[in-house]
Image (tube, rainbow, N blue to C red):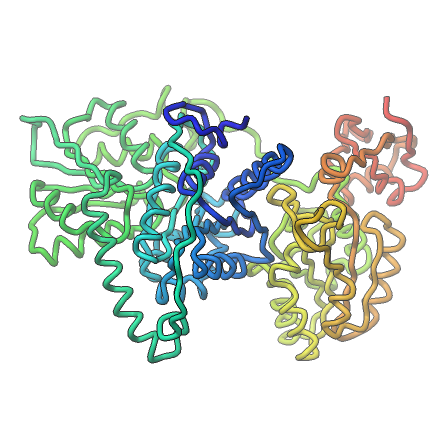
Length: 632
């Protein structure tokens, strides 16, 4: 049995941070999980989906449901509706997804949700897989919802259980805010008990609470403030907010450090590394909103100097400074400076240097020796390896054909997905990107403002997420844009999660397939072409035909993601390509198609058999230069 399903309190298992959240939700008795997949949150719903299939395969009935929604707003609305019906719900998304879901979040906080809803917001400091590194603790403050910030896998489990308990007790949404490091770290987790079942909370019809017309909303705002004060009382005594006193007789002024989120791990390591443990009192905050004002006030009252450490924006620092001023405390407060900013992630070396400056000590060398060009350990930096479209990816063929058809005469509007990697040379098919689903809308605006021909690229999952409204708007406003829907049959970028366009035999009984072409036509688009995404000749003809027209035109390039086809559909190809004629044409194909399976030695081109997927796009791009042969 999967450890996540074991009812074995006290057992310890090594878990991913996201897996620990799954375990915590199971221990809380979650009824429904809804999501839109987004790194670094994706493993949570994916794990629930896997566990559900295991339970069904064993002939048992799962106690929870899992839904992949078309976007984050819909995921939160479904979760809120279920929580209104008394169910405990977990809604998961990455940080930028909360921008999409903000509308229902704010109203859900006003009306309250009797069943209990926990919102997992997985932030991405350092932009490992995102277009920004926004700090969603700001949303907890703006929407007036309690916020927990785990710093370990064990805390991820514990805080999830407590978050559900608090959400049901207060009948308010609760945010569980993680980061990429916390989501993807591995650590020991001690299992708690699994409940037999958790009853749905009763909900009575109460339009004067649950239908927020202006008169109702005004009253609910006051009620929300009261609930937040109740949550603040919880934060004051939360076991996740702890104080460690400084050693008696510690030299210098009385010092205190207030630290939250993943920065707690860096601080503990930095204090130990430089022998500073005990030189300052430490207040660790795990339940970071609402602010435990009395706890912080008492801590600051015992300090002459305080340092606030938090990854991301200086939200806690500003709160602490405001609180100290409000309470008339004379403590000197330090925080972010030129060496420890709100950009990117913290590191042990960054925190060590900040502590040294604050303590007035010489800055330590990076671990293992003096840093060279920002790289620790004195080693030379590794060669850069930019992300690239996979070998055999049909998006490459579409971009190659688009460049052949339009070159630099067209402007290319891109969107969020693995196909955004078309921005790299030699393909260069991404001139701008605003946000998820924006390629059609922003591309339409650009075309209207400049009169330039615009080609907008959008994936199938992104089309269902928020592209349909942009397409409807383009038709309604008679925009002039060629939209290319890159339909690879899955949500490829985040791990092949389901979307409405996936084949019915893959979706099974749990969901229904939606065909993109009739949706596009139903939205009023008259000029529609559908071609295989790996057929260069068909792509070329379609681009030529649609490029000569005006108005809203849509090309659907349909070809399964090569990784998905091999791993999930069992469609691996037994052939590979090889070069049979060297020369200028072979070099041209290498330089224009730039397949990662190509390699060059001097003026000769070869194909790496271990990378070649057998797509044979190169044979179409340079006939006579390549040929297909059976895999060795």
